[in-house]
Length: 422
Image (cartoon, rainbow, N blue to C red):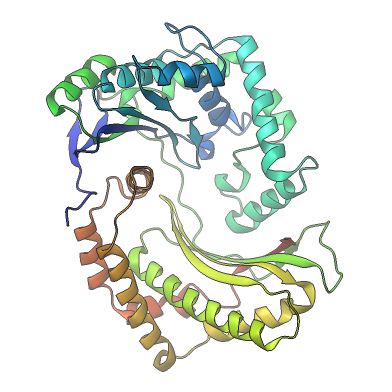
């Protein structure tokens, strides 16, 4: 099977890094990653990167201003056949993605160059987009912002005095209202330069023509700006404690969500994934057994997942719809599994390794998922990671290395536990 994650890397004269993969898909997908996110917001201008992202996709100089619906129809017209997603602001980067039918990639790239380099930055648009960010926050966290407050408290518990403790994609109203037009213009001029961008292209296109077009549309100096570097994240996991949101009910038949989080140094790679897969299997199995033994029709699900970020890694154990009266029972399950001795855990880790290798060997996905994986790889590892490389890295990890994380960095006594309304 052809490996769909083998990308060619080209560094443009402007310093922009371009990853290309040609395939007869009949379409072209392009993502531009700007290496600045809400973790880089100035202390007194939190939300700046998110507001700037909104301003990039709303209107540009050179193209008539349109509403989102009209813009979508205009881009999809027969002359253009392009679909442009709204931007996404993450912790350490902002991503802008588009797709076009093969043969329309010239317009697609020109339009993206306008979006990123020639946005319409005006006072009225700034006011509109600040209100849009507020509405997004209400959509995700509720109108009373209680979940948002809980997230702030969780970040402080996880990151202590590090800048990540106070950086959120949706700051409070007072912080958003402090953002001025001059702040956005200075931010755009400093950060939205080709040397601080990475482009990922996958699909059916002419390589030589595409690179010439990128060089012409994204000019600049290679020393214009390099990705900002955050200070190291504290590697000590938080002291054991729980965060109860104020609106958490104490009624025994009320469902709640529970999350355990462990911070680890970056670069744990597949040994953390192997441990997460093993724990996920064990926790899911034990919870389902317990559900079958209970006489209530209300059951809950629980599992485990690993997260890799540029500055830290995390292990999450999550459970949804846990009745308050069953919280102690779930905690006993988790604590028991995390204390398994090597003779019990190592065979499970060996099976988890086989499962990871099987999933990579069978990896065959749609274009959207492929591009999402490529973005994650570029942000975390600096480049898309091929399936062959993943298989080699999984094969090099031993169950004993994965087991060593238990006790060293992950134990029942050093994870942050959050209990919230389900």
